[in-house]
Every structure is written in C-alpha cells, then in structure tokens.
Length: 266
Image (cartoon, rainbow, N blue to C red; front, side):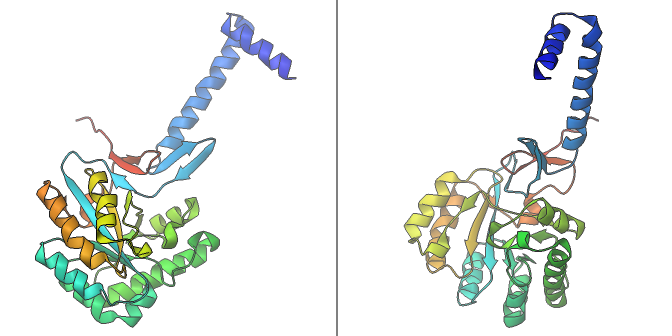
C-alpha cells in the first residue's frame, strides 16, 4: 500500500495527469483547513495538535510592560507592596484567589482604591487541568463573584494556579469572559532569591510587551521591587496594568505565547 502511494506521488510530481489533479486537490484541501484552524485567535498548530495558548507577552512597538502579583496565601507583604508602587506611581495587576478575597477583603479594597487591577486566580487554587469544564467554570465564577462584590468590577483576566493550563482551561476562561494570562519573565521570588538575584533575572530580560511575575508573599520582593522599578523607569519603560497592555481583538498568538496584532487593510 505504501509503495503504491509513493509511486502516485512521484507520478504526480513528474507530470502524470492521472494523479496530478487528485494530489493537488488534496494539497489544496489541507491548506484550506490549515488556514481555517489558524483563524482562531490564540490557537497555534504544533506537531498535529492545535494548542490554545494564553498570553505570555505582547508585541509592542512602544516601551510598555506590565508587572503582576499572584496572591494566594498570606497578606503580610501586600500593604508594603502597595506603598512601594505608589511611591513610583506604578499601577499593576494582582491575581487573587477567591479564598484570599474572603480572608482579606480589606486588602482587595486597598488594592482597588490604589488603582491596581484585581483579577482572577481561581477560587481555591487547584490544578485546573484536573477539573471538568463545569468545575473549572465554577472556580472562575465564584472567584469573580467575590472580587466583584468588593470592587464593583468583574475580572476580565485569569491566571491559572501553578501556571497549569490546557486547551480546555483557556477555552473555559474565554467562554466566561476572561483572557488567560501567563508571563515571560519570572522573578522566582517564591524561592527566596536575594534582591540582586531577582534584579539580574528580570531587568536584563525585559523587552517591550513583557509581563513580569511576582508574588505578594515573596520574602525579599519588597526589597527587590524598588531597585527593579528604578532601573526599568530609568530605561524609559512605562508600566501599566495588563488589561492596558494586551489587545482584546484582531490579534493572533505565536508559538511562544506572544500576542501579535493583526494587520488590517483600510
């Protein structure tokens, strides 16, 4: 069977009219299917699998980036972080777990009043890929309900706990009105790196459209943050909440998770 198909491909390539039309037609159908699959924003075809990717970074021509904090456990560092960010006039995005919202509603209010985005990090911090779609939706919506009850604003961004996602997780978030957000630069502050180690991990790697990950409970994050902010601001970077960094329509996502605006013809 295999030898027969090889002969037919050779015949088609060398001008045998009997098979050329059939082979060329098959190629055309495959191309059309590939284009159709590629039309879905965020989907990337790799090794026969269509992956629905979150946003790791954004293609920007201007020097604008975002800083994000994940909050799932304690709140000891939250107010110091708010104070540091206020000193430098920087607004960021905090991804919070629903249980954290219930334990520390005053911090949610403080974040919102300081101008920071309060976004969704699930309700109980599970591995989302291990949940059925209905349970995933419940995690998302319960957390969003808790946040909205305090801030009056329903989250439009979601970060999966542990960075754990698959196509279903990203699709479930989308169906519930949220973009799934990852990061392209990780401070690793949860490993108790020194301020200088965090600086060295972050500052040299930043590029326009970067999304930096911190945690509100990082042991040395309040020490590292001022030196990192000063370096980025001195280099001409503008730091904005993630919802101001990303594109919400007319975009694609490449294989690295970089969001790219589509070129529209006028």
